[in-house]
Length: 495
Ligand code: NAD
Image (cartoon, rainbow, N blue to C red):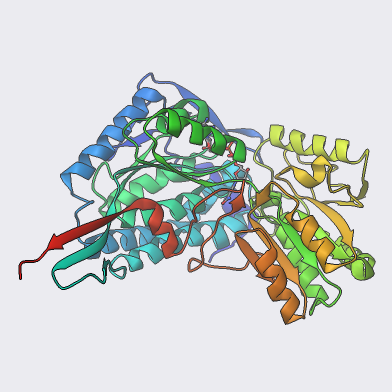
């Protein structure tokens, strides 16, 4: 990994070639009506590019291309070995173009270059490679029937998948969906967020270079209420896989119901509880994981540990160490490899986070206030203590580096507070008591429970939520279930 210096990235940023057109049926093209929208660099506070604004006509064309190649079988009927080779080549190409992809991601989102280089791009390539390797390792079943019949249970690709993704980890989250969808043999129309469309467009060219047949991966950039909605209501899209807000997720369920009852898989919002008991085995580790769990990616992480639940007897000691630790997370130039905290996605999101802080501070105590810094799109680490669990600070997803702290006295109280949320994406428990760790893990209503860590994991484990955090799971072999039909073939045998 080449972190280099600020000037290295500034020079590269000046020269970078940016693709701005839709990618449909293996070719770049403008939107049918020629319209575009601006994507901004929140660090430099300037327009980065004008990108094709795909609408219904473009979505129709992309879905048609995806359908045609699916029916032709160039990919849907390719052998698992062939799919594995193409997706592995794509992962190789992404690694080879790692610097360029990381730079695009940082310019488009304002996230620190060190994180794009270290986490986003390698993670995205790893996801594709992991599914590529799974291509020829997933078997069907033979049912235990009598001797006069044979029942085989096989998994088949479904058809056209629409993948709609958000802006917080644009390429990574796209690849969590593309990996299983493509390796299963489907065709995909990917719609990145209008706030971060650039790496998806670059990925499309790399996929073609890797040998993915035309039409198998299409990228339609544009707005949610235009391109997104056209996909959600399209009668020829069979699967919708989505990561984004709970509000949009609910709308997609309605659109699916009003159109063709396409399957809708949702990875949505979160308000995860991070619970530290007095018998936490390593307080320093818990403090630094807590800080990273809320400040990493400027707090724009669905599974961020936004609610810190501290056992009364250690609360003061923990908070004073946490304040110390927060100093390591201060907003800076995203292109500087030393920067650990970059920009929020744009100024209007920063304003929304400011509003939460301003209104929250009327009812709760602000231990650290991240509003004052020289960057218009940045908010620094912010910590509220003694917060009412019923307040918006505790219940709503702020999607910024804002931590709320609640004290508890008993295990039962901690569990009640943690589960008192509309969301259920993640939860963590810090304790050296194995029985308690196990008890809590089973009773916490969350898709992932972390014991003595926050948000560890890799491609082998499923990721997703309970309650209004979504349904289905990304990552692991479980994700393949979302992109395959289960078929029974029942054969009567002659005796
Ligand atoms: P968003 O819901 O506003 O947008 C997500 C995507 O949906 C974008 O591509 C957008 O254009 C599209 N979209 C918006 N309205 C649409 C519509 N009516 N029809 C079809 N598509 C539409 O979310 P966001 O602000 O981009 O992302 C932040 C949200 O994503 C947060 O709530 C966060 O928790 C969530 N998220 C969840 C996970 C997870 O795995 N659970 C991971 C990352 C982010």
